[in-house]
Length: 411
Image 1 (cartoon, one colour):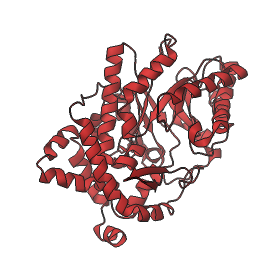
Image 2: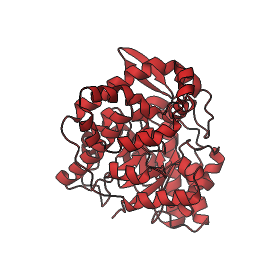
Image 3: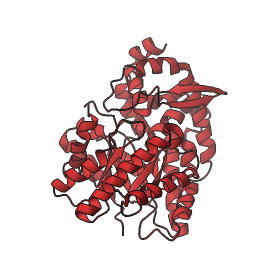
């Protein structure tokens, strides 16, 4: 039986420390030995990761005497072929398969058990990815079949969590073999597209939906939550907020431990985050029912209206944010938001968030017009019952609000 209480160290470019692709092999080993993680992610989504990297991580872990495949695993985030092409997908799958084959030959274990599929728009996309994965695995005689993990990165996909889990269950049928279904719920991109209020509520709904699916279908579901340190990106990696946020986002089985908390925090602070995340794994989520869809739609519309006014200046500031990983430029691999029929190009989540702080306005505050409207209509209490951390989050973010700087930059 697969152990579902896990922490995943990732390659997110959210630290002030520059980490080159060449350094990421050593970083992955340190994820196991120094940062308390059970999984290390090798990331090919919009990223210039060498295709030799997963095998090199296995080799380094073997040389370090780590129990790879038993206590530790390597999870590969694939490029989405719809966005980056079939060739990039096949190359990333080959990299994962060769790592697994090497682990099998040297240790007799499966090192790569999970493949994350990002930027999904429909559950059916997983069928072709799985077919490609099986073909590569068979051709290279790479060992045990890897399982797909859909990465849900929008409010809309969060609300369809049950559909993605149903598709996974149908995909594997009676071949679950003691493995749970995993679904990866990402907060950051959902926040960029819909704002903090909408994305926080949709993440809570996704975790609740995963628990309900598991209960009704009798299938173990082990959700992963992907959140960074800033409130806008979930706050789950923030030493000052983690005690609050683990209560808000109950229901996760795995949480990401991203670069910022590992490299920009004191070791004791990082340890406290890791310990708190591990202690709160698999706590049953709170029910999220009622008029959730209408609140999400309303909050997202207010956010989009506010964001549209400042999109040009945000893009300008985003170009000055230093890159701390070897990634494709956000201009080539950014996000787009459709508002009133027009396409609005936006930076990727980490760059987007950094740009707003540089402007003197925490991006969490972009929901201010919506919250003021709720207050005027005497509806704010209902939102605060759904998101009880909102007051504490705003109090925390207020220390980063620079009104004069924001007024100068934004008008």
